[in-house]
Length: 416
RNA sequence: GGACGAGUGGGUGAGCGGUUGAAACCACAUCCCUGCUAAGGAUGCGUAUGGGUAACUGUACCGAGAGUUCGAAUCUCUCCUCGUCCA
Image (tube, rainbow, N blue to C red):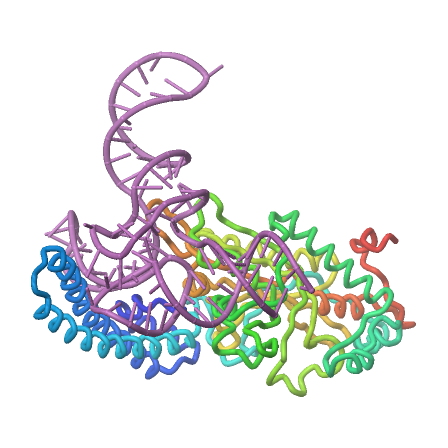
Protein backbone atom coordinates (compact mmCIF):
# COMPACT_ATOMS: atom_id res chain seq x y z
CA UNK A 1 0.00 0.00 0.00
CA UNK A 2 1.17 3.50 -0.68
CA UNK A 3 2.03 5.70 2.27
CA UNK A 4 -1.00 7.88 2.95
CA UNK A 5 0.99 10.15 5.23
CA UNK A 6 3.43 10.79 2.44
CA UNK A 7 0.50 11.42 0.13
CA UNK A 8 -0.62 14.13 2.54
CA UNK A 9 2.85 15.59 3.03
CA UNK A 10 4.39 15.38 -0.41
CA UNK A 11 1.45 15.05 -2.73
CA UNK A 12 3.02 16.41 -5.89
CA UNK A 13 6.07 14.18 -5.84
CA UNK A 14 3.97 11.11 -5.21
CA UNK A 15 1.52 12.05 -7.91
CA UNK A 16 4.30 12.53 -10.45
CA UNK A 17 5.71 9.10 -9.66
CA UNK A 18 2.40 7.30 -9.79
CA UNK A 19 1.42 8.97 -13.02
CA UNK A 20 4.53 7.42 -14.57
CA UNK A 21 2.93 4.12 -13.77
CA UNK A 22 -0.33 5.11 -15.36
CA UNK A 23 -2.34 6.05 -12.29
CA UNK A 24 -4.78 8.83 -13.08
CA UNK A 25 -3.92 12.07 -11.35
CA UNK A 26 -7.56 12.71 -10.58
CA UNK A 27 -7.74 9.46 -8.67
CA UNK A 28 -5.04 10.72 -6.36
CA UNK A 29 -6.80 14.03 -5.91
CA UNK A 30 -9.84 12.10 -4.78
CA UNK A 31 -7.78 9.90 -2.53
CA UNK A 32 -6.19 12.85 -0.84
CA UNK A 33 -9.56 14.51 -0.31
CA UNK A 34 -10.99 11.30 1.11
CA UNK A 35 -8.08 10.96 3.44
CA UNK A 36 -8.70 14.43 4.79
CA UNK A 37 -12.40 13.75 5.15
CA UNK A 38 -11.65 10.61 7.08
CA UNK A 39 -9.37 12.47 9.41
CA UNK A 40 -12.07 14.98 10.20
CA UNK A 41 -14.65 12.23 10.64
CA UNK A 42 -12.32 10.47 13.05
CA UNK A 43 -11.74 13.61 15.03
CA UNK A 44 -15.48 14.17 15.28
CA UNK A 45 -16.00 10.69 16.58
CA UNK A 46 -13.13 10.79 19.02
CA UNK A 47 -14.29 14.04 20.55
CA UNK A 48 -17.75 12.65 21.20
CA UNK A 49 -16.40 9.35 22.39
CA UNK A 50 -14.10 11.11 24.86
CA UNK A 51 -17.13 12.94 26.22
CA UNK A 52 -19.08 9.70 26.44
CA UNK A 53 -16.24 7.99 28.27
CA UNK A 54 -15.91 10.73 30.85
CA UNK A 55 -19.67 10.90 31.42
CA UNK A 56 -19.80 7.16 31.86
CA UNK A 57 -17.14 7.39 34.50
CA UNK A 58 -19.12 10.06 36.26
CA UNK A 59 -22.13 7.80 36.03
CA UNK A 60 -20.37 5.17 38.07
CA UNK A 61 -19.35 7.74 40.65
CA UNK A 62 -22.93 9.03 40.91
CA UNK A 63 -24.27 5.58 41.57
CA UNK A 64 -21.70 4.88 44.19
CA UNK A 65 -22.56 8.10 45.98
CA UNK A 66 -26.26 7.47 45.55
CA UNK A 67 -26.85 10.70 43.59
CA UNK A 68 -29.70 11.17 41.16
CA UNK A 69 -28.64 10.06 37.72
CA UNK A 70 -31.65 10.87 35.57
CA UNK A 71 -30.24 14.18 34.28
CA UNK A 72 -26.88 12.67 33.45
CA UNK A 73 -28.52 9.72 31.79
CA UNK A 74 -30.47 12.00 29.49
CA UNK A 75 -27.26 13.75 28.45
CA UNK A 76 -25.44 10.52 27.91
CA UNK A 77 -28.28 9.03 25.90
CA UNK A 78 -28.42 12.05 23.63
CA UNK A 79 -24.68 11.96 23.09
CA UNK A 80 -24.86 8.31 22.20
CA UNK A 81 -27.22 9.01 19.34
CA UNK A 82 -24.74 11.53 17.98
CA UNK A 83 -21.90 9.05 18.29
CA UNK A 84 -23.77 6.43 16.30
CA UNK A 85 -24.28 8.89 13.46
CA UNK A 86 -20.72 10.11 13.41
CA UNK A 87 -19.35 6.60 13.66
CA UNK A 88 -21.35 5.52 10.64
CA UNK A 89 -19.86 8.33 8.61
CA UNK A 90 -16.39 7.45 9.79
CA UNK A 91 -16.78 3.79 8.87
CA UNK A 92 -18.06 4.61 5.45
CA UNK A 93 -15.18 7.00 4.77
CA UNK A 94 -12.74 4.44 6.05
CA UNK A 95 -14.08 1.80 3.72
CA UNK A 96 -14.05 4.10 0.72
CA UNK A 97 -10.50 5.17 1.40
CA UNK A 98 -9.24 1.65 1.96
CA UNK A 99 -10.74 0.16 -1.17
CA UNK A 100 -9.23 2.99 -3.19
CA UNK A 101 -5.82 2.88 -1.57
CA UNK A 102 -5.51 -0.88 -1.85
CA UNK A 103 -5.95 -0.66 -5.62
CA UNK A 104 -3.11 1.80 -6.16
CA UNK A 105 0.20 0.32 -7.30
CA UNK A 106 3.60 0.94 -5.79
CA UNK A 107 5.65 3.99 -6.70
CA UNK A 108 8.28 3.18 -9.30
CA UNK A 109 11.85 4.06 -8.35
CA UNK A 110 13.40 6.97 -10.22
CA UNK A 111 15.78 4.50 -11.86
CA UNK A 112 12.92 2.75 -13.68
CA UNK A 113 12.95 3.76 -17.35
CA UNK A 114 9.78 5.19 -18.85
CA UNK A 115 8.03 2.97 -21.33
CA UNK A 116 4.75 1.56 -22.50
CA UNK A 117 5.39 -2.17 -22.56
CA UNK A 118 8.04 -4.89 -22.69
CA UNK A 119 9.51 -3.44 -25.88
CA UNK A 120 10.75 -0.47 -23.85
CA UNK A 121 12.61 -2.57 -21.31
CA UNK A 122 16.31 -1.86 -21.12
CA UNK A 123 18.87 -4.61 -21.58
CA UNK A 124 21.56 -4.41 -18.90
CA UNK A 125 23.82 -7.22 -20.03
CA UNK A 126 24.10 -10.52 -21.83
CA UNK A 127 25.61 -13.61 -20.24
CA UNK A 128 27.04 -16.40 -22.43
CA UNK A 129 26.74 -16.39 -26.21
CA UNK A 130 24.07 -18.48 -27.90
CA UNK A 131 25.63 -21.24 -29.93
CA UNK A 132 24.99 -21.43 -33.64
CA UNK A 133 23.19 -24.40 -35.08
CA UNK A 134 24.14 -25.94 -38.42
CA UNK A 135 20.51 -26.94 -38.81
CA UNK A 136 17.24 -25.32 -37.88
CA UNK A 137 16.74 -25.86 -34.13
CA UNK A 138 13.36 -27.18 -33.07
CA UNK A 139 10.97 -25.69 -30.59
CA UNK A 140 10.68 -27.33 -27.20
CA UNK A 141 7.19 -28.75 -27.64
CA UNK A 142 8.34 -30.64 -30.66
CA UNK A 143 11.40 -32.00 -28.86
CA UNK A 144 9.35 -32.79 -25.77
CA UNK A 145 6.93 -34.92 -27.74
CA UNK A 146 9.63 -36.57 -29.82
CA UNK A 147 11.49 -37.66 -26.72
CA UNK A 148 8.35 -38.64 -24.87
CA UNK A 149 9.14 -36.23 -22.08
CA UNK A 150 5.96 -34.21 -22.04
CA UNK A 151 2.44 -35.10 -23.11
CA UNK A 152 0.27 -32.08 -23.66
CA UNK A 153 -2.85 -33.88 -24.83
CA UNK A 154 -3.13 -36.12 -21.81
CA UNK A 155 -2.76 -33.09 -19.57
CA UNK A 156 -5.83 -31.64 -21.23
CA UNK A 157 -7.63 -34.92 -20.66
CA UNK A 158 -6.89 -34.82 -16.95
CA UNK A 159 -7.70 -31.18 -16.39
CA UNK A 160 -8.13 -28.70 -19.21
CA UNK A 161 -6.02 -26.82 -21.71
CA UNK A 162 -2.65 -25.52 -20.52
CA UNK A 163 -1.99 -28.57 -18.35
CA UNK A 164 0.52 -31.27 -19.22
CA UNK A 165 1.97 -34.56 -18.03
CA UNK A 166 5.71 -35.22 -17.80
CA UNK A 167 7.17 -38.67 -18.31
CA UNK A 168 10.49 -40.36 -17.70
CA UNK A 169 13.50 -38.12 -18.17
CA UNK A 170 11.20 -35.10 -18.54
CA UNK A 171 9.75 -35.70 -15.09
CA UNK A 172 13.14 -36.61 -13.63
CA UNK A 173 14.69 -33.46 -15.01
CA UNK A 174 12.02 -31.33 -13.38
CA UNK A 175 12.79 -32.92 -10.04
CA UNK A 176 16.53 -32.62 -10.61
CA UNK A 177 16.17 -28.95 -11.47
CA UNK A 178 14.13 -28.26 -8.35
CA UNK A 179 16.74 -29.90 -6.15
CA UNK A 180 19.62 -28.26 -7.98
CA UNK A 181 18.05 -24.82 -7.64
CA UNK A 182 17.18 -25.22 -3.98
CA UNK A 183 20.68 -26.41 -3.16
CA UNK A 184 22.19 -23.59 -5.18
CA UNK A 185 20.08 -20.99 -3.38
CA UNK A 186 20.81 -22.53 0.00
CA UNK A 187 24.52 -22.26 -0.65
CA UNK A 188 23.99 -18.58 -1.33
CA UNK A 189 22.53 -18.16 2.15
CA UNK A 190 18.81 -18.63 1.53
CA UNK A 191 17.06 -20.80 4.08
CA UNK A 192 14.80 -23.44 2.59
CA UNK A 193 11.17 -23.23 3.63
CA UNK A 194 8.15 -25.30 2.69
CA UNK A 195 4.80 -23.54 2.66
CA UNK A 196 1.08 -24.10 1.99
CA UNK A 197 -0.12 -24.00 -1.61
CA UNK A 198 -3.42 -22.54 -0.44
CA UNK A 199 -3.62 -19.16 1.21
CA UNK A 200 -6.34 -16.89 2.54
CA UNK A 201 -7.43 -13.46 1.40
CA UNK A 202 -5.32 -11.62 3.95
CA UNK A 203 -2.12 -13.15 2.63
CA UNK A 204 -2.98 -12.21 -0.94
CA UNK A 205 -3.83 -8.67 0.09
CA UNK A 206 -0.52 -8.50 1.89
CA UNK A 207 1.51 -9.15 -1.24
CA UNK A 208 -0.80 -7.20 -3.56
CA UNK A 209 -2.54 -9.87 -5.68
CA UNK A 210 -5.82 -8.87 -4.06
CA UNK A 211 -8.10 -7.02 -4.26
CA UNK A 212 -7.22 -6.11 -7.84
CA UNK A 213 -6.30 -9.36 -9.54
CA UNK A 214 -8.81 -11.89 -8.25
CA UNK A 215 -9.59 -13.00 -11.80
CA UNK A 216 -6.09 -14.41 -12.16
CA UNK A 217 -6.46 -16.67 -9.15
CA UNK A 218 -8.03 -20.07 -8.61
CA UNK A 219 -10.41 -19.90 -5.68
CA UNK A 220 -11.63 -22.82 -3.64
CA UNK A 221 -15.38 -23.07 -3.98
CA UNK A 222 -17.20 -21.98 -0.86
CA UNK A 223 -14.07 -21.02 1.04
CA UNK A 224 -11.90 -17.97 1.31
CA UNK A 225 -8.90 -19.91 0.08
CA UNK A 226 -6.92 -19.50 -3.11
CA UNK A 227 -4.28 -21.53 -4.89
CA UNK A 228 -1.02 -19.60 -4.77
CA UNK A 229 0.10 -17.94 -8.01
CA UNK A 230 3.67 -17.84 -6.66
CA UNK A 231 5.52 -18.84 -3.49
CA UNK A 232 6.08 -15.14 -2.95
CA UNK A 233 2.63 -15.01 -1.36
CA UNK A 234 2.97 -17.57 1.44
CA UNK A 235 6.67 -16.97 2.05
CA UNK A 236 6.43 -13.17 2.33
CA UNK A 237 3.40 -13.52 4.58
CA UNK A 238 5.11 -15.89 7.01
CA UNK A 239 5.95 -12.87 9.13
CA UNK A 240 2.74 -11.00 8.47
CA UNK A 241 1.64 -8.79 11.39
CA UNK A 242 4.88 -9.34 13.28
CA UNK A 243 7.57 -7.10 14.64
CA UNK A 244 10.94 -8.69 14.01
CA UNK A 245 14.12 -8.02 15.91
CA UNK A 246 16.75 -6.09 13.96
CA UNK A 247 19.33 -8.83 14.32
CA UNK A 248 17.02 -11.44 12.78
CA UNK A 249 17.27 -9.53 9.48
CA UNK A 250 17.76 -10.09 6.69
CA UNK A 251 15.51 -13.11 6.40
CA UNK A 252 16.65 -14.80 3.22
CA UNK A 253 14.39 -17.65 2.18
CA UNK A 254 13.96 -19.99 -0.73
CA UNK A 255 11.00 -22.22 -1.44
CA UNK A 256 9.85 -24.63 -4.08
CA UNK A 257 6.12 -24.69 -4.81
CA UNK A 258 3.71 -25.40 -7.56
CA UNK A 259 2.12 -22.20 -8.82
CA UNK A 260 -1.38 -21.80 -10.20
CA UNK A 261 -2.56 -19.09 -12.53
CA UNK A 262 -5.74 -18.74 -14.51
CA UNK A 263 -3.85 -16.77 -17.16
CA UNK A 264 -6.96 -14.69 -17.64
CA UNK A 265 -6.37 -12.39 -20.57
CA UNK A 266 -3.59 -14.54 -21.97
CA UNK A 267 -5.82 -16.19 -24.55
CA UNK A 268 -3.87 -16.96 -27.68
CA UNK A 269 -0.45 -16.34 -26.11
CA UNK A 270 1.96 -19.27 -25.94
CA UNK A 271 -0.85 -21.74 -26.34
CA UNK A 272 1.55 -24.38 -27.49
CA UNK A 273 4.05 -25.99 -25.13
CA UNK A 274 4.83 -25.32 -21.53
CA UNK A 275 5.78 -21.66 -21.55
CA UNK A 276 2.44 -20.59 -20.15
CA UNK A 277 0.67 -23.24 -18.11
CA UNK A 278 -2.02 -23.03 -15.45
CA UNK A 279 0.15 -25.04 -13.09
CA UNK A 280 3.92 -24.86 -13.02
CA UNK A 281 6.87 -25.46 -10.74
CA UNK A 282 8.93 -22.60 -9.44
CA UNK A 283 11.74 -22.11 -6.98
CA UNK A 284 11.46 -18.70 -5.40
CA UNK A 285 13.65 -16.36 -3.39
CA UNK A 286 12.06 -14.09 -0.80
CA UNK A 287 13.89 -11.67 1.45
CA UNK A 288 12.77 -9.41 4.28
CA UNK A 289 15.44 -6.84 4.95
CA UNK A 290 16.21 -3.47 6.43
CA UNK A 291 15.59 -0.70 3.90
CA UNK A 292 19.24 0.32 3.73
CA UNK A 293 20.39 -3.17 2.74
CA UNK A 294 17.66 -4.13 0.29
CA UNK A 295 19.41 -2.95 -2.85
CA UNK A 296 22.56 -4.93 -2.13
CA UNK A 297 20.39 -7.97 -1.52
CA UNK A 298 18.51 -7.33 -4.71
CA UNK A 299 21.77 -7.52 -6.64
CA UNK A 300 22.62 -10.76 -4.84
CA UNK A 301 19.30 -12.23 -5.92
CA UNK A 302 19.75 -11.28 -9.56
CA UNK A 303 23.24 -12.73 -9.51
CA UNK A 304 22.01 -15.93 -7.86
CA UNK A 305 19.37 -16.54 -10.53
CA UNK A 306 21.77 -15.60 -13.31
CA UNK A 307 24.46 -17.88 -11.91
CA UNK A 308 22.09 -20.83 -11.95
CA UNK A 309 21.59 -20.31 -15.66
CA UNK A 310 25.33 -19.92 -16.12
CA UNK A 311 25.92 -23.16 -14.23
CA UNK A 312 23.45 -24.79 -16.61
CA UNK A 313 25.33 -23.13 -19.48
CA UNK A 314 22.20 -21.41 -20.68
CA UNK A 315 22.73 -18.06 -22.44
CA UNK A 316 20.59 -15.31 -21.01
CA UNK A 317 20.26 -11.59 -20.68
CA UNK A 318 19.35 -9.27 -17.87
CA UNK A 319 16.72 -6.65 -18.46
CA UNK A 320 15.50 -3.67 -16.48
CA UNK A 321 11.71 -3.38 -16.70
CA UNK A 322 10.19 -0.09 -17.80
CA UNK A 323 7.29 1.58 -16.01
CA UNK A 324 4.74 0.05 -18.36
CA UNK A 325 5.90 -3.51 -17.72
CA UNK A 326 6.37 -3.14 -13.97
CA UNK A 327 4.08 -5.18 -11.73
CA UNK A 328 1.62 -3.84 -9.19
CA UNK A 329 3.76 -4.20 -6.06
CA UNK A 330 7.24 -3.59 -7.44
CA UNK A 331 9.33 -0.45 -7.03
CA UNK A 332 11.64 -1.85 -9.63
CA UNK A 333 12.09 -5.19 -11.35
CA UNK A 334 14.85 -6.96 -13.21
CA UNK A 335 13.93 -9.80 -15.51
CA UNK A 336 16.22 -12.54 -16.66
CA UNK A 337 15.46 -13.83 -20.12
CA UNK A 338 16.86 -17.10 -21.35
CA UNK A 339 17.83 -17.76 -24.94
CA UNK A 340 15.50 -20.15 -26.78
CA UNK A 341 17.09 -21.09 -30.12
CA UNK A 342 13.91 -22.84 -31.29
CA UNK A 343 11.96 -19.62 -30.85
CA UNK A 344 14.98 -17.55 -31.86
CA UNK A 345 14.40 -15.14 -28.98
CA UNK A 346 15.00 -14.44 -25.32
CA UNK A 347 12.09 -15.38 -23.02
CA UNK A 348 11.46 -14.46 -19.40
CA UNK A 349 12.63 -17.10 -16.94
CA UNK A 350 13.00 -15.03 -13.80
CA UNK A 351 11.61 -11.81 -12.43
CA UNK A 352 13.22 -10.19 -9.41
CA UNK A 353 11.55 -7.29 -7.64
CA UNK A 354 12.16 -4.98 -4.75
CA UNK A 355 8.79 -3.86 -3.42
CA UNK A 356 10.48 -1.68 -0.77
CA UNK A 357 7.88 -1.20 1.97
CA UNK A 358 4.82 -1.55 -0.23
CA UNK A 359 4.05 -5.13 0.78
CA UNK A 360 5.37 -4.68 4.30
CA UNK A 361 2.88 -1.88 4.89
CA UNK A 362 0.03 -4.06 3.63
CA UNK A 363 1.17 -7.16 5.49
CA UNK A 364 2.28 -5.20 8.57
CA UNK A 365 5.79 -6.62 8.68
CA UNK A 366 8.02 -4.41 10.81
CA UNK A 367 11.24 -4.61 12.74
CA UNK A 368 12.53 -2.89 15.84
CA UNK A 369 15.01 -0.21 14.89
CA UNK A 370 16.10 0.96 18.33
CA UNK A 371 12.83 2.14 19.86
CA UNK A 372 10.97 2.63 16.62
CA UNK A 373 9.04 0.09 14.58
CA UNK A 374 9.99 0.33 10.93
CA UNK A 375 8.55 -1.45 7.91
CA UNK A 376 10.94 -3.96 6.38
CA UNK A 377 11.65 -4.08 2.67
CA UNK A 378 10.42 -7.18 0.90
CA UNK A 379 12.03 -8.67 -2.18
CA UNK A 380 11.11 -11.64 -4.28
CA UNK A 381 12.41 -13.34 -7.36
CA UNK A 382 12.24 -16.59 -9.24
CA UNK A 383 15.35 -18.65 -9.04
CA UNK A 384 14.06 -20.13 -11.26
CA UNK A 385 10.91 -21.06 -13.10
CA UNK A 386 11.40 -24.82 -13.49
CA UNK A 387 9.26 -25.49 -16.57
CA UNK A 388 10.84 -22.72 -18.56
CA UNK A 389 14.29 -23.89 -17.52
CA UNK A 390 13.42 -27.29 -18.86
CA UNK A 391 12.26 -25.66 -22.07
CA UNK A 392 15.58 -23.83 -22.30
CA UNK A 393 17.53 -27.04 -21.72
CA UNK A 394 15.59 -28.83 -24.43
CA UNK A 395 16.11 -26.11 -26.99
CA UNK A 396 19.74 -25.32 -26.16
CA UNK A 397 20.94 -28.89 -25.63
CA UNK A 398 19.21 -30.41 -28.64
CA UNK A 399 21.05 -32.38 -31.29
CA UNK A 400 20.23 -32.64 -34.94
CA UNK A 401 18.67 -36.09 -34.50
CA UNK A 402 16.26 -34.67 -31.92
CA UNK A 403 18.04 -36.12 -28.89
CA UNK A 404 18.81 -33.86 -25.95
CA UNK A 405 22.04 -33.74 -23.93
CA UNK A 406 21.92 -33.41 -20.16
CA UNK A 407 23.66 -30.41 -18.53
CA UNK A 408 26.74 -31.51 -16.57
CA UNK A 409 25.63 -29.99 -13.25
CA UNK A 410 22.40 -31.96 -13.30
CA UNK A 411 24.00 -35.35 -13.84
CA UNK A 412 24.66 -36.00 -10.13
CA UNK A 413 20.98 -35.30 -9.49
CA UNK A 414 20.04 -37.91 -12.07
CA UNK A 415 22.60 -40.48 -10.99
CA UNK A 416 24.24 -40.37 -14.39
C1' G B 1 -19.91 -34.44 11.82
C1' G B 2 -21.35 -34.10 17.51
C1' A B 3 -20.21 -32.67 22.97
C1' C B 4 -17.46 -29.97 26.22
C1' G B 5 -13.21 -26.59 27.38
C1' A B 6 -9.89 -22.66 26.05
C1' G B 7 -8.11 -18.16 23.19
C1' U B 8 -5.40 -11.66 27.54
C1' G B 9 0.81 -7.59 26.19
C1' G B 10 7.75 -10.90 23.86
C1' G B 11 6.65 -15.49 27.31
C1' U B 12 3.93 -17.64 31.67
C1' G B 13 -0.51 -16.03 33.74
C1' A B 14 -4.43 -12.83 37.22
C1' G B 15 -8.67 -10.34 36.08
C1' C B 16 -15.52 -8.55 40.55
C1' G B 17 -19.87 -4.96 34.29
C1' G B 18 -17.31 1.04 36.24
C1' U B 19 -11.32 3.54 39.71
C1' U B 20 -7.91 -2.14 34.16
C1' G B 21 -4.37 -0.69 28.69
C1' A B 22 -4.96 -4.33 31.90
C1' A B 23 -2.05 -7.58 38.49
C1' A B 24 2.06 -10.74 39.25
C1' C B 25 6.25 -13.32 37.54
C1' C B 26 9.89 -14.08 33.62
C1' A B 27 12.44 -11.90 29.66
C1' C B 28 14.37 -7.21 27.94
C1' A B 29 16.57 -1.94 28.51
C1' U B 30 18.91 1.93 31.41
C1' C B 31 20.86 3.24 36.08
C1' C B 32 22.67 2.11 41.17
C1' C B 33 25.20 -1.09 44.54
C1' U B 34 28.69 -4.74 44.91
C1' G B 35 33.22 -7.10 43.15
C1' C B 36 33.61 -12.16 41.22
C1' U B 37 32.34 -17.20 37.94
C1' A B 38 26.98 -14.68 40.47
C1' A B 39 23.53 -11.84 43.39
C1' G B 40 20.67 -7.50 45.07
C1' G B 41 18.04 -2.71 44.29
C1' A B 42 15.62 1.47 41.25
C1' U B 43 13.19 2.85 36.95
C1' G B 44 11.33 1.83 32.29
C1' C B 45 9.12 -1.63 29.00
C1' G B 46 2.40 -3.39 23.87
C1' U B 47 0.37 -1.75 18.95
C1' A B 48 -1.98 1.77 15.72
C1' U B 49 -3.62 6.53 14.97
C1' G B 50 -4.96 12.00 16.00
C1' G B 51 -3.54 16.79 18.55
C1' G B 52 0.85 19.45 20.63
C1' U B 53 7.76 22.43 19.34
C1' A B 54 7.68 19.60 23.74
C1' A B 55 6.15 17.90 28.48
C1' C B 56 1.89 15.66 27.56
C1' U B 57 -2.70 14.11 25.79
C1' G B 58 -7.39 12.08 22.93
C1' U B 59 -9.19 7.49 20.53
C1' A B 60 -9.11 2.32 19.31
C1' C B 61 -7.32 -2.63 20.27
C1' C B 62 -7.67 -8.46 25.69
C1' G B 63 -8.78 -14.48 18.67
C1' A B 64 -12.39 -11.83 14.62
C1' G B 65 -17.10 -9.59 13.87
C1' A B 66 -21.86 -8.07 15.66
C1' G B 67 -25.08 -7.07 19.93
C1' U B 68 -26.88 -5.77 25.19
C1' U B 69 -25.48 -1.47 28.48
C1' C B 70 -24.66 5.26 30.38
C1' G B 71 -20.23 1.93 30.72
C1' A B 72 -17.72 -4.73 28.36
C1' A B 73 -11.39 -8.23 28.64
C1' U B 74 -15.69 -9.43 31.88
C1' C B 75 -22.78 -10.69 29.54
C1' U B 76 -25.24 -12.55 24.53
C1' C B 77 -24.82 -14.24 19.36
C1' U B 78 -21.98 -15.69 14.91
C1' C B 79 -17.38 -17.13 13.01
C1' C B 80 -12.13 -18.69 13.37
C1' U B 81 -8.24 -21.33 15.87
C1' C B 82 -6.43 -24.77 19.54
C1' G B 83 -7.31 -28.82 23.15
C1' U B 84 -10.06 -33.07 25.15
C1' C B 85 -13.87 -36.67 24.51
C1' C B 86 -17.56 -39.10 21.15
C1' A B 87 -18.96 -40.74 16.14
